[in-house]
Image (cartoon, rainbow, N blue to C red; front, top):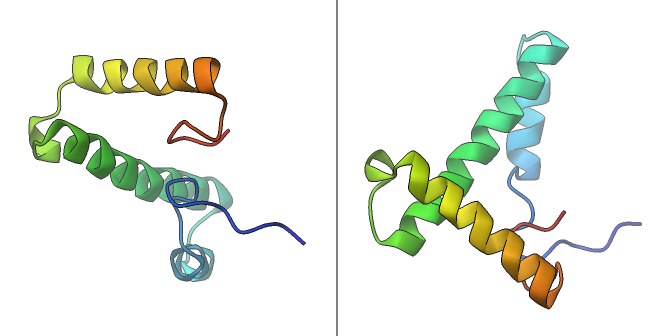
Length: 85
């Protein structure tokens, strides 16, 4: 049995996963849908950290956020980073 994931590590709730699975979509479309939902949640988090709306996020800010999270992972371990992979 898998241990429950910490907040920030699971970007698709069970309810959302069930809805995607039930959708009349091809497998590759379901995969893209899961990625899109997860990306939306991650962008919301990044925007909140910057104190701006998602629409105001820039490519440079998104890249910088990933660099920062990667540095935290390298320096402090994966449990300290937001993304757990």
